[in-house]
Image (cartoon, rainbow, N blue to C red; front, side):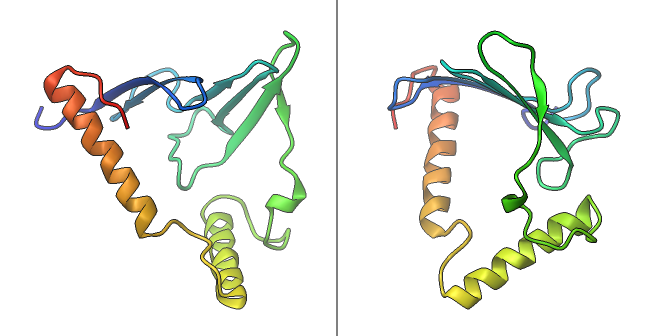
Length: 143
């Protein structure tokens, strides 16, 4: 192996919330993508719409499930206000591309940024540098 294919992160946010992240590359049997958020008032899970397909965050279709008060997770519908393209646009890559172009058009029309900027990129690089330093030294990093 010439590059790490797994990253494990854990920490405490400024709000006091505990965060645990496990990113893994390659293909594995079982859950290929799972994002869970557990809060004091309920839980959310984001899972591939079709668990048989390989899931990519940028282009795959996902289902959001939620639960409160100890109930089982159930599928949640996406509010229509999150869909900016006509209903005739097919799911998958065409939908994702069309959504992106609609956001870009909105930014151009309104003269505002609708995507991450250089400042966001700097913060992401600082985070990655801290992760690498923690891995290299075994010492907790504080951002």
